Image 1 (cartoon, rainbow, N blue to C red):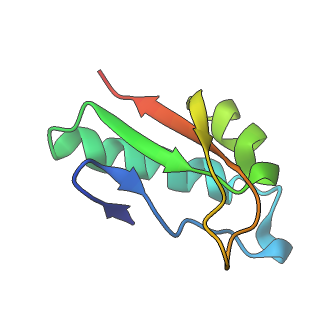
Image 2 (image 1 turned 90 degrees about the vertical axis):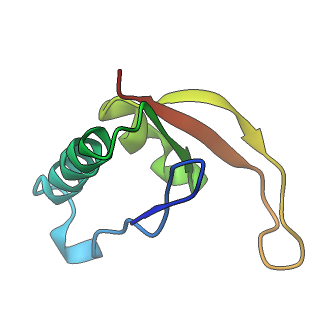
Length: 85
């Protein structure tokens, strides 16, 4: 789901049993197509740290780190951007 503005990818998950089958790559491609169709030139992602490698593999670039959001989130999170231009 795209939230915003500014545009941010939120709530993209793949079930454990479906991982490794290309579902996440298809979801990311669909998101980018929809974002471009909506006239967006970038989409931000605040990732769970273990998911950063996936987002980078589908075209996102790390631009920073988002601090912990206590009390629920106690770890820093990678901030990435999909450039759609």
